[in-house]
Length: 498
Image 1 (cartoon, rainbow, N blue to C red):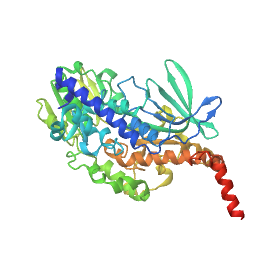
Image 2 (cartoon, rainbow, N blue to C red):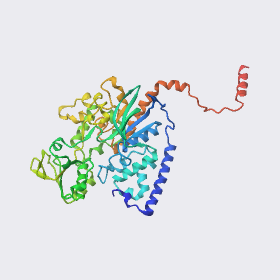
Image 3 (cartoon, rainbow, N blue to C red):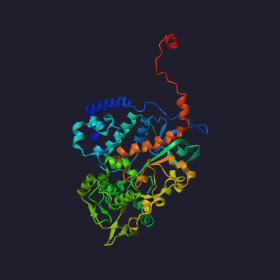
Image 4 (cartoon, helix red, strand yellow):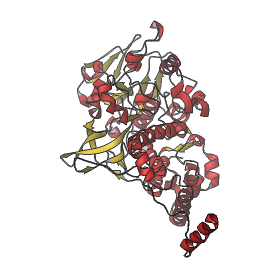
């Protein structure tokens, strides 16, 4: 059922468009009726003759646009969203995400702020009908992107595309500078707060393992999250390393493109069967996760990393039904090398021969690899600075992640750099501090309010210095005064004096 709208044509498409337009009208009416608060409360600020945004969101994918909409709903008016991709390509959904449908159960989406007409369910039913919603367990990937596009149009969020953030730094006086490259020019944007909604690779980079990149020319391998020309794999023997969603989705794509065979290799003796994410997805745990003890959060993160989650059900079943796929558990790759025109992959049991490799090995944790963190990375607390796990639970990758505050804010190593608490990491950097999937779709319902509270807390502390003066000078004609009010006051005064 991928891309359900592809089945809509002619009158059906026109009727669906009318229903979606009417839903948008109702959603906007709901947002207006439930506005809370209904006015902006953060005073405008200029710094070095430039306007300062209340919040600047780096990343215009699913998290970024929902964050922007939530902040605007809370009376934070000057919100900017920057994304490095061209319009329509924000997030992974039309690029390297190749799954048929989302992993997230359809009922766990939390983008609607309790407004039913803004929900994924309402949009899907308006587009395809109530019965179509009842028939699916998970939302088709491209329909999720279409919903996000509709969501942006309804909430009025504006995304500035083709903006590459290359640094985030202090501009002094409680203002954060954001260096942005666009159309060959570099500028500095200013903000009171900055949110890094930069996704799964927000704490590092998609990177091919060194033992592969050092041994092979670059045209003989791809990372699973790269822009892959699958047509070049027709008739080829393809080796895939990894056991997660990307491994299966790329295997399917290669076989559909005509690959002669795909060997899907992974080091585990068997695929994970249980998804531990589902256990954590309760209102209590997800809302208050940041209040758990460091040892508890570390143990949970370590358990997730050790046990992982299974590939999505649909990806697994589709892959297993395709001729040419060989599943190879307990098959780590020890080395790779060119052997004539073939690629020789050494494993513990045998040497495999391939024509092309796809590395579904995820992202490495490497804060220094993120250009927007070039200033921040050396001055923030990491988990290695705050917590020493017992020897059996040590993990270098987890230790290298930032130790975030209760609202997803960075914590400084020194009070000289308190400004970093104005920068919030709503991405994979939060995996230990705020749960392994708090920034994913199924975590939004409970994690986003926590983030928004952290941002608005910072903003209200900014205005505290003027709060009393603004209160005492506040004027509002709440009490209507009758025309003969002065005469009435006089008569009342005479009675009291008598």
